[in-house]
Length: 459
Image (cartoon, rainbow, N blue to C red; front, side):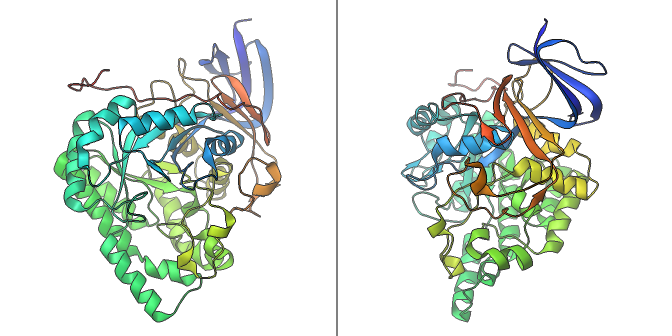
């Protein structure tokens, strides 16, 4: 038999959908995609109406934000169960800010034996060192760089002020990699936070009031103008506002590389229902916005203004998300296990073609991180990373599957019409339903393909 694995079903590609299509795999790579009677294979599954998607690439994961909590052993387990075959991990690790080649190597050596799916890494800078180590981190294999216009923590998650941001962008520009930035204006947020504290409001309303839309939009102007000034691709790693996507589109119209990522929580949760109900468990930076903004973001998806969809996944222990004083809680939520089915649900409900799922969670992330030579598409020659969803109704409960280090999720109780039934990494089944089959160490570190010769850096 010519093929190791053949799957037949509804094949979802970035530009079209193949009803009664098939995907054939040989030696861990996609070998053939077609229509009609599927060829023979050593393993052959006729999946009926099931959706066959390229394995998702989650562009924003925080596996190590809290010491002795999640780690790659859990984040990549959640990923495998959720149809995510590659995660891109953020550099803000408690106790190891990833700001040097040595820190990159430490993280690769730490994550490799644990990872059940493939992983790529972001790098960042220590504000005291500036851009001096950017080149060495490129050589060490980072796929992008991450900065923040807001200082969450002076050591673990520092603010990068405008002049330093400009210098970092200028250092990254010749490498062709992208500079991703957390978009909240530090001075504005601190002013609004003081106003909220002075008002005495401490409940669920406090977070949104402390970070109104202007705090995001001011930062986005800084980020995109810095990219325009330096020639560096500028990327906003999460935007909760339709207006922000308009800003990026305007910069692109003027010829600059300006992109925006939308997290799944901004497409799912709203302030007046979910934040009110969940309190600290729905505290995220930037904040979850009102329902009208959620629907605006879906329109931005349909119009092609969203570049990536990600989770910004972080599994804080429950005690850091349940303080009655809203502003005292940690920011961020887990989402790896449920991003793909949530996006599929939301798109179908609004009549948005599922081709966007293949584009925003696979093809575009692969391009963005320069992994598209091996990842991101059901294209012959690329890794056979595949996600299968079946039309089976389920109600999400993070505690039930056993694939999450925490049992809480802001998505608990949401009804999903499509459920991940199988995940394949390089042609091997790594999850079947909620059961994760991949052993720790199955995943590999993936590095970007250099697009140009960079002086002093080996290709």
